[in-house]
Image (cartoon, rainbow, N blue to C red):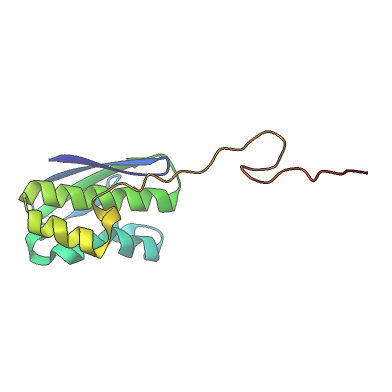
Length: 129
């Protein structure tokens, strides 16, 4: 089962198959993910699913974006992979109740910079005198 997750410019693809419960991100075990807070965030779908997902191997490949965007994209891809593999609507509803972005992509992106200023909204100060 192949599923995807997106956040900002990060895109994650997760492949779920029967196995020993190993989760890898870009070939490395999720336990080695550099930031502890984000590691816990990635593990949320597995903790919510509990015993249902303990015999699933999930391999995630994620590209683009930064560390946080990649973590959120991976999290969505993992949750979708579990739901799709188990074909469990009750689990999907549980994910949605916990946090909607586990199943639905967070489509918010950075607003592009505009002319006449430093950023999307900031403008050069106007002088009348």
